[in-house]
Image (tube, rainbow, N blue to C red; front, side, top):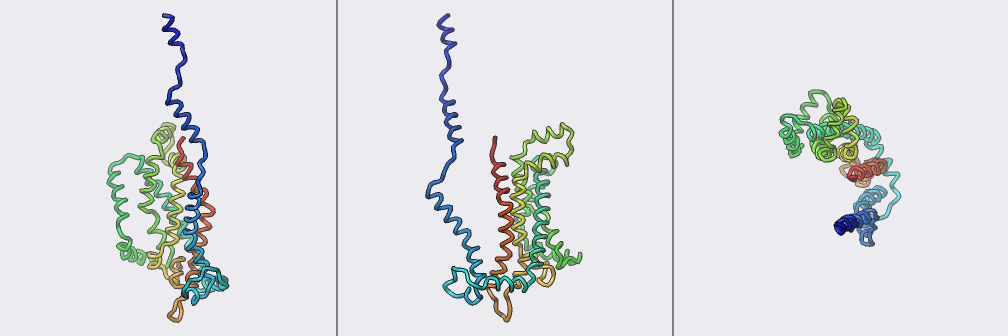
Length: 303
């Protein structure tokens, strides 16, 4: 009996599983540094990504005749400020910037709001026909936008919205891609237990959305807002039909009439206008990009 007690009281040896977990924890706490090849690939990717913007600036600083000559210029010239003045005044670039900012901000805000609400409904609420409605929403992504141009133009004509910004804003208040994107995110990121606990505390649906859904969906909302803002900023097809350069044009519509005269096109002026249209997007990403990337990172880390 004494041998049994001594054997029972003896301390258990550490298991291999515990030591393995300890080693994995130590490795997880370390910071991994890339080698020279990693930095070389990153520098190469950065150069390739930034070169079109750099060449756009170089082309905007030369005359139209020099831009179309071979070989193309690779160093800045002396015509930048002159081209900026011509491009700014030829098509009222200031008004086009204001109109594009209004359109892009309104479309991005409405799409993020409605897509988050619809994505929450499709992800966590139970109602009849949910899967059928989701399939219909996803199926609309396969319909070419050209098919809706004629009925949509007839509709805005009857409302008297031609050459007005609401003709561009209202048809784009929500996007099927945004609904599907938010649904997929909330399906994994939002636990059902949080919603049930909020309902047990007496919270109504609007309070649950404001205090539970929106804080959890904030990283995805930021990403979706940036994507929709850039898409609305660069949209050309429908604004070119609904608006005219003489009315209330957006930047892309204004650029369509830039640099033309005497049956020739001054490519330096056109590229100058494209550079002006790109700078606000760079400023937006410079101001919000850190918060967006930080939100994605914090949303991806699990405790």
